[in-house]
Length: 296
Image (cartoon, rainbow, N blue to C red; front, side):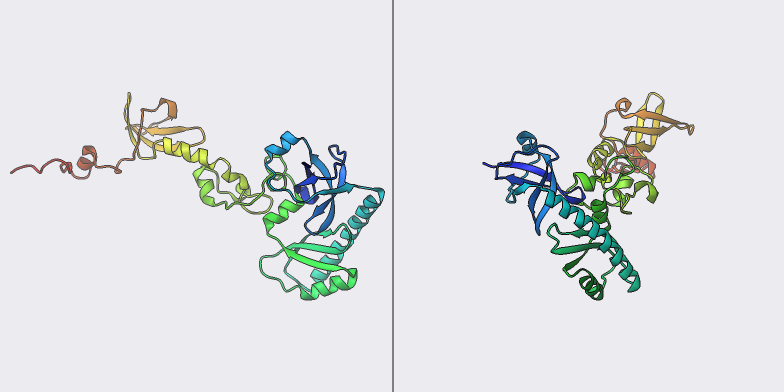
């Protein structure tokens, strides 16, 4: 059975390939592999069988063709130079034709038979004339692909506010919906500059610990809950989900911070959520529903 090797490709993208030709490979060796649209160049990123198995590569069909040669490296240098030229030319033509699109990246196929231009735009763009300009200039197959701002950040890479590389460009495979409700549940500031990533969308990491926050929220008594303590009946005014603590207000208006471990045992409910006698009396002193009405 052929070994499975993980290879780092362009834009921090990594895929698994078969070493069916039994090449002697070391980490960071440069190789030519079968890509979606032909051959491409990459670096050996992971080859230990046990570590590869932990990644669960699934069914792998593409293979490593060979190690790079001097001619391959020369071709790569030529492609990089062509990408810079194509980027500048395409950006000038976008301005000339006044197209509402933001050019992100240009990728030249390893064999030079295709140039792909990646761009983002808020709406659909009629770029037919732009394609004609590019085809007339570079005399090869031209593709324009519209991508979202998150995909744009994934391709360009960078550092997030945490100081680490973008999750989307390193290990995150799919984008999941992220909503403001997630930030509210974690009691985060709704300042866009605090909860938005480099792409301008909500941070993907808002969803990572959401389950833990929801578990803590379910354990803590909600605001309005009345708790009997050694200082009398105190009312919960607010909760700190991350620290798992609550603030209680006494009859004199003073507030006290109490950790979850020091609270009376639950379950908890806010006043008004049940039909207890105290609640009924508070609503007018009527009898509890399970009691018969007073006999005249």
